[in-house]
Image 1 (cartoon, rainbow, N blue to C red):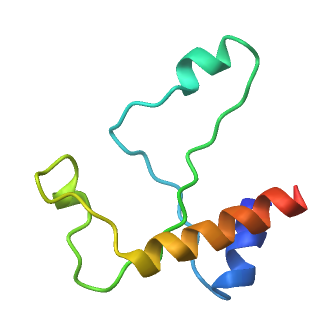
Image 2: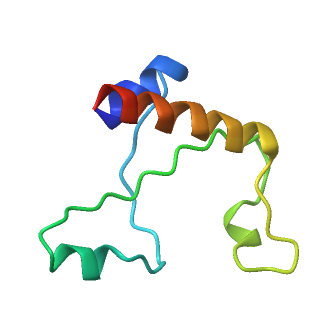
Length: 80
C-alpha cells in the first residue's frame, strides 16, 4: 500500500528499503502488538545533503518536500 500511494504521486519512482540509524517508538509499540514502519516520503532536490543536516543547528526540510510527503501520507491513510 505504501508503494502504491507513493507511485500515485511520483509514478515510476524506485522504492528501496534502507536501514537508518535512528531511534523510534516502534520498539515500545511492538511490545503492544503494533507493527510500525518507517515511511517518510520526501522528494528531495538533487544535491541536498539531507543526512548531513540531521540534528544540526540548521536542520530543515524544504517546504516542497514536506508538502509532497503530506500528500502521499494523506493518500495512504485514506486508502488503507
